[in-house]
Amino acid sequence: MGVVYRADHETLETLAVVKVLHEHLSHKADVAKRFENEARAASRIGHPGIVKVMDVGRLANRTFILMEFLQGESLADRLKRVRRLGEASAVAFIRQAAGALGATHNKGIIHRDLKPDNMFLVPDPDVAGGERIKLLDFGIAKLMEGEKGLSTHSGALLGTPPYMSPEQCSGAGQVDVRSDLYSLGVILFEMLCGRRPFTGRGFGEYIAAHLTKDPPSVSEFNREVSESVRRIVARLLVKNRDDRYATAGELIEALNVAGVPRPRTGDWSGIRTGKVGTPADSEETTQGINIGPTPELADTVPDDGAPVVKAGKQAADTPTTASNRARPVPRDGEEPTPGDIRNGRAMPSQSLGIVHTALQDVAPMHFVGLTGGTFTMGSPVREEGRSSNETEHEVTVLAFDIAEAVVTQKQWQAVMGSNPSFKFKNIGNSDEHPVQNISWYDAIEFLNKLSQREGLPECYEVDGSTVRLRESCTGYRLPTEAEWEYACRGGSQMMYGRGVDGSALSEYAWYDKDWFEGAVAVKSLKPNAWGLYDMHGNVWEWVWDRYAPYPKDAQIDPHAPTDDNATLMDADDTAERVLRGGAYFFWAVFMRCAGRYGFRPGVRFGYVGLRVVRCARRQP
Image (cartoon, rainbow, N blue to C red; front, side, top):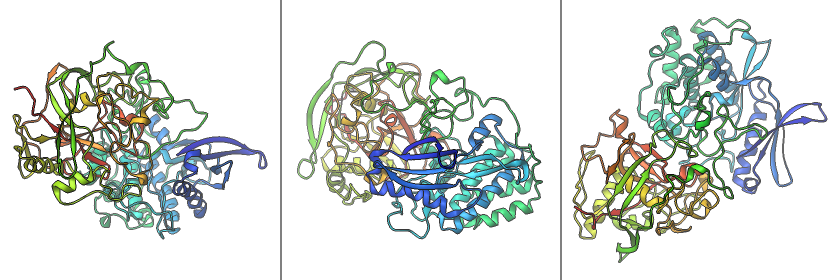
């Protein structure tokens, strides 16, 4: 959302911090209002555990916040150095944070983005141990009294996925103080165990874990923690918020009763276990929403803190390293990196143009014929934003027809008789906007009904949560992951496909927008080289495949799995299905041709849709 500067306050002759909203966002009333809300929220509390706000205003069309300059380090940096803290230190920090939270909640404010990056450790001789924890970044804080213009959309996912409460993950609009307490539980677990209770390759996996998985016990990773503290962590992390502590005060009382001794001054160094490790051997990889570190920095401590779903920030005069942020994503006007072009060759154009149309009488769905070919699937190790599950391998796909755009709300309505899409500010229920808020199972049902409507055999045999693909079917189906990437590349091995480099991405993709702006009508931007629209951005697209590591050897027309699909509640990660293409409020790196993320097949989000494939000309 903005830039943070270190500044000299000439009047007070002291250091200060100036947080400035980007100019193009300062003109958006709702964004500027939320930014100013951060200043009001922090200044209203008046607690020594909250960063002090000195001023807020507007200068030269830029909104800014003036804050105190803090000497010390973030809790995230402390944990990178020492891996985990002793029980006394961890409990003392949580007790302090709970005190600051209690003051916050008493003012009618919920933080909603508690994480080690937003908890700063400063020297303070007046507290046990000689250090005080201060809470930062109230940028997405929610005022419980619902001040006009400050409430968030009920479907918005705001926060940092590894630390979000189940009610945040479900997109619930009515989070309360217990959501912050859940986040404190994740942080306490991390301080005690040197890792978070849930690990993941991307934000989808974190969200699924918070919603469905039972957290492990602290004792699985640290047997030295007392039983009383283990019980406190377990109660903070329960799914049902009614079973958590009701207030920060209740948590403080439980910590006091636990009988953990206060740390002595200088006793904050924690348990030193050496460097966390490289992406290859650390407990959490650099996959998914975390976009760093880059390969050339792989021998440094990885930045495994996932950024806020919508946007992040970095000090303006701080060089980008693995310890703070990965390299910036390509923006308009930048040239593609050398890693964009691989193997010294590009695929020849193999599009036949529009070959047939479905739903001709009500909402025409045009299909582009692709003759198939061989390409390198996945991404090179130096590609910006790459995940380790994108191993390059050669793939040959056979001929198939693919819809030129994602399914619209009108097309979905014509087949299903209903419209599940959220009503965003820009979306409404426009016929030509993409359908969204659908699960993988919903997509399967739609495709079978579309085949019936067009007089074609159904491609899927459905038995409860088990779905089988009839391989010889000539009806409508989801693209395989290989087909989707082949179509997205449009005859190129570049990061964003032929002609869609970092300098031109905004001409082809609707991305990096505010959540409230929503998607846009299909075909609003340019098509790729093969006449396909919205392959990048707008809404994520379901594909058939399970989310699993790629094979390393060459493949011919891979479209696994053909075996039974795992049930929705199966704990096996391979039960997740793949999403491709990115969506409107994600960064540029999510638009990459090789980018892939996994979600449970029953999950619905307001930024997920589908694209249709038919393989009438597939070779036997």
